[in-house]
Length: 90
Image (cartoon, rainbow, N blue to C red):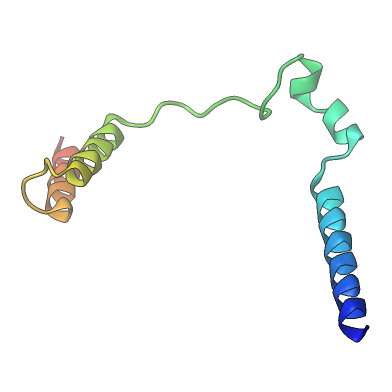
């Protein structure tokens, strides 16, 4: 009997904590109605997207992809260092 009562209390506590967390995480209706995106009839984050990243970022991603696929000769650190030195010297 004692084990059942403790189990029931544990389950009820878990349900209470879960529903309280969901209620706290859900945005309220007033915030949803007054956002700039909803006024413009759009969905998504308010504001504009950031500008494009510099070109060397794409090069860094290419180096990492080549390293992961096994197509990079040498070390990743050395290749990244060379790429950074090329950018700063240009």
